[in-house]
Image 1 (cartoon, rainbow, N blue to C red):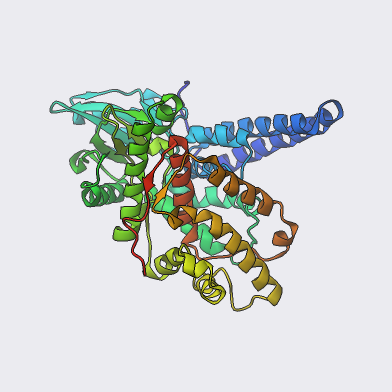
Image 2: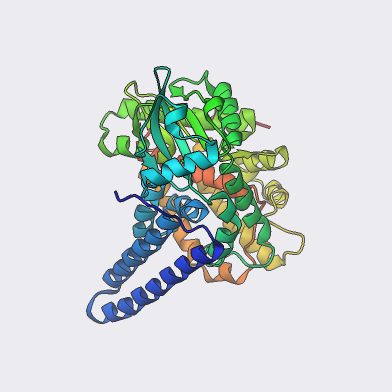
Length: 437
C-alpha cells in the first residue's frame, strides 16, 4: 500500500478536498441516470453506490482524522448503509495508507523531541497497521516487543472543522433536524477530542484492563508511560489476528463461542459494574491469539454511563416494563424520547415505534442463554432499520429523540451485536452481570 508524505491539515485544504469529492459524486449520479436507460434499477443503483463509496473513501483516507473516524463509525451501521459503503468504510478500522517513513520520523521528533531510534533499541519506520487517528509501528526495548502508536499530524486541531463539514451529510443520513442537534454533535466532538489525547488513553487503558483482568479468556497489553506522550503511545506488541480475519476462516464453533462469551462478559462487566465502557467495538480493536483468547486494544473511546441514563435504559429491557404501557411511557420520558412538547400524534407514533424497536433490540436480554449465530434476530433488526429509514411519517416529525448518551451506548451495542453475529457465537450466558432493579 502506497504511503502518504503529506496530510491536508488546514480547514481550507480539508474542505477543498471534500468539495472535490462532492463533484465526483455529482458525476457518478449523471452516470447513474444514464445507466438507468440501459440497465435494471438494481444494477444502476449498485454501480452508483460502489462509485460513490470508492470516491468518498478515497478522499477520507487521505484526510484521515475525525473525517475518516466518522466513516469507520458508519461502517458499523450495516443495516443503514448500502453494502458497498460498509465494505469500503470498514477499511478505516485498521487498513488505510500509512505515513511515509520520513514523515513518521519527523512526526516522532515533533511530538517526542527525539528520533525513535534514540528512544528504542529497534524501531521499524514501516507501519504494521494504520487506522483513522494513528498508525502502529513495531519496536524493541530491553528485550521486549513493543507497539508504538503515532498520531497523524493535525488530527486534534481539525476535529471541529471536520465535524462542521460532515454535519450536513449526517443530518440528512440520519434524519436529524438542525434544531437542537448540537448536543449530539458536541457529544461526538468531545469523544473524538478525547481519542486524540494518548495520555488519557493510557490512563483509561490501565484502569479498564485492571478492572477486567479477572475475566476468562480476555487479555490486555501493558502500557509504558515513559515511552509515551500526548501524541505517542507505547504498549506491548500483542500477537494475533484481527477478529475479522479470524472469522473469515474459522470453522471451530467451540472456539468462536468461547471468544463470544469473553467478548460479551467483557462488555457486560464494564457496563453493569464499572458504569463505563469501551465504546468502539469494531474488529480492528480486537485480536485473537493462538490460545483462542480475546486481546483488547485501543481504549481511546471510553463512555461513562450516568445512573440517570443507565437505570431507565436497562429497565426498558425488562419484559414487565415492555408489557406495561404506563411504565414504558415513563421510561421513554426519562430517556428524552418523549418530550413535554409532543403532540398526541407524536406520542402515539414514537411510543409505538420504540416499543417495536426495543422488543427486537432487547431480545438477547429476555433469555438466560442466547444464540447470536441465528440470522433471524439480525434479519429483524435489518428489516426494522430499513422500514423506518424509509418511513415518510417519521421524516415529518422532529426526530431529534433521546438523550445524547444514546449515541455511544447504541453504537456499543450495535457494534457488539455485529461482532457476536460475525463470530457465530452460540449458547452465550447473558445476564450474569446485569443488576436488575
